[in-house]
Amino acid sequence: MGILGLGVLTILGVLSPRTPEELAMAPRLGPEHLSQEEQAGMRLYTDSGCVQCHSVGGIGGNVGPDLTNVRSGRDVSWLVNHIHSPQGAIEKTVRPAFAPSPENLKALALYLVRLNPTSPAVGLSGITGAELGRIVYVREKCAVCHEIDFTGPVLFGVSNRRDRKYLIDHFKDPRAFVRDSKMPSFAHLPEEELNALVDYLDTLK
Image (cartoon, rainbow, N blue to C red; front, side):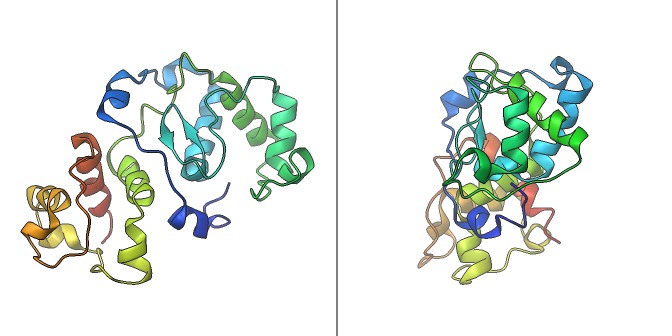
């Protein structure tokens, strides 16, 4: 579940796309609907990189199972044991062990139990801007060309060289800017995600 432990899966894993309709219909429940312990679990979920492999309410990855209804048939005790020692609960799982403090393990389990199909986005509606852009960057495998085989240019400092409109227009139609570009068009992405991607690139200094 940790970012370092899943570096390769994070870069190469396939992440769940969201259509504009799904974005519009997703519940927008915020952290105010969570207890203090559940809020601590939500922060651990996002900060530890769980969102890279697991999806909640259409946000995140599908390397691991969707956690929107993880509470079905699972209680806090089972989740604590599984998070700490995944192979003990599911023999063939590829997820590494994750061992925060007992208090944080319980908080994470309480947050996951709080999720359900009628309010799947609880706590995750706050993922916007650069954090959402980072998820889009990983989901669309931008790192494969821009960080691994360097088919595309290095993106550090790109926002110092290009403004937001240029970058979004380039995402939508790369060959309008570089005739023989191998970059695919991302015109299908919602404007929210395109803008978030620019926000993320702005953090790469």
